[in-house]
Length: 435
Image 1 (spheres, rainbow, N blue to C red):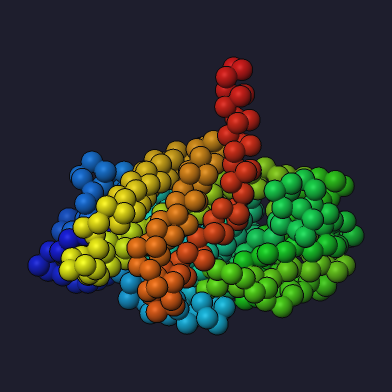
Image 2 (image 1 turned 60 degrees about the vertical axis):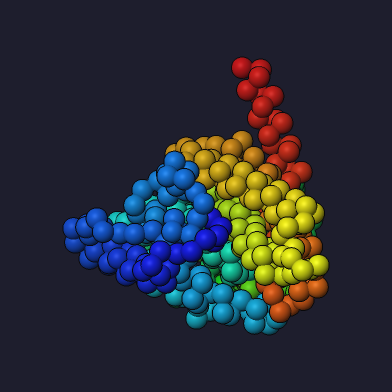
């Protein structure tokens, strides 16, 4: 939601801090087994500054719990994520201390059931978190996505009770940073072409191969890794204790620099058989299921980038004067603002609408592909419009638009290229027509 207008008299910060404290009590009550907290007096910071109607708010914040979550994450992002974003971008490093704050807030296991230490929320909640964090530091949000969606969410749904007990407490708390290894130097979109292998050897599997472009590779302790056993894709948990496992140096990159990236290298890497996730050959099904929430949250990241860039563009166009008047009086500027708003709202509505129909037992590949296909270019386009409206100011690092512009490009590539989404949608629509 864009921040246009004046907050209520209470003040946006005070409203959000009240929601944050209340959300913290909800999390604490859940973990202690206490009765649910009464939230009858909750208020909404985002609604106070938004042009959204009551009807559209039901889409973006379908329950009071979702609204409280949004208010808390929005305030956390503004107060703690934003001030460090530029420095993390320059360093090309993940702010580990800040990352672990996400664990303190109960966000690292947002989709995990309460009885297993998570927040017990849904795909809409995951979209809310990625949307709000990406307004200020998409790179930091990408590290969150790799940990909470690619590892924690994926791992939970294919792990045994014993495996959950070993890995969930430390990954949900943030003590261990995690990630996922799928892409290889010679296998990206064509995932079936992966060449990493795993061979049974007594009580272990021996892995050989390399994964590349792995977010959280530098800091990560454990990774959900896909390898072929007798030619069939199989999932494992590989951690730093596994002999023969190493990571490369940090791979420098254009954007999303608030998270790191490296290779995962397996050289006769011995992984205990107890770290096999599910049955041999079941990895592809796990992978396809988790891709849906991954693509949704990547779409939400693009929406967050677009929201922030639109806000910055609107403010600049009102404050900047040319020829004795604000530049928002000129038709060329109005075109950029109007089109940016329309495409941002369209991407937002599509992403949140699809999120309602995605869950562990509810497949929606065509919806998640459509959301990311449409939303991914929106962040980049709106950032480009904002840079054009702001001119030299937008191009300089003094303002966040140039960083957001660089960050946005990855969303057309990572988690499935836009070309892969076009292929999947065509295939799914053709099958539906045949039925």
